[in-house]
Length: 263
Image 1: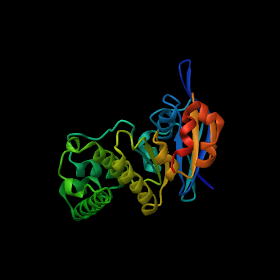
Image 2 (image 1 turned 135 degrees about the vertical axis):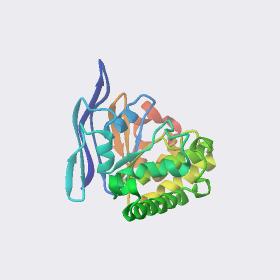
Image 3 (image 1 turned 90 degrees about the vertical axis):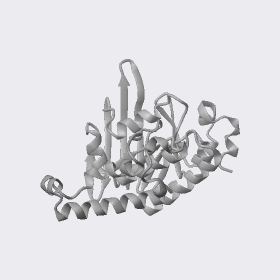
Image 4 (image 1 turned 45 degrees about the vertical axis):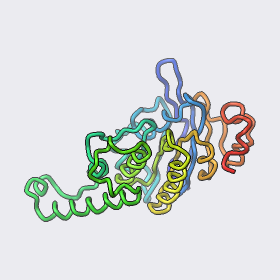
């Protein structure tokens, strides 16, 4: 059963159609890739799934915990609360906040105390703040940032900023995690660490993951299925092996040397 179903999803900007009649689905626990040339519409899909853009037409259905929710037309904070969190192609941290506070701020929707308790620091406030601190530090340990909890986010090396974005997304307690080019700008050693982290958090947090990425070695190694976009149209879907041998995909995006990707 699909945890996320996308049906005939379309987004037009004036006379330009960025995504056209897109059909996709994610099953619970899957790690799925979304690939294609620059400008193919991949990030537009993420923006539609998270409420940054509203679709021109089509539906986005989240089915989890026995509930079915229509996400098209919803505000980003409602979609996040429903269980979808993301990272961004261009890092969007709170640069002048600490590493710890970047993660802590993402937990606001899960706080279990009211205004009065917060104002007067009642026992419920203290218990919740203690829980939040412990959970934040655990996420920083997982992403190997716990020793830098008090540093400003802008002072982290690039690769660690990427990890911090993932930690912040996990703090929202998602059931679906959208990763937008998480390996962009990383060196090979950092990419290997990232690959291991993605595989580990998927199991640890029982996540369903949709991944946009241009590093074909990473995509072919960890994705079970792959969707391919070109000019906003879905041109292929299949396993990594099927995608690597798809003539239309090779011509549009991958190139003839793709057969070595992931080997």
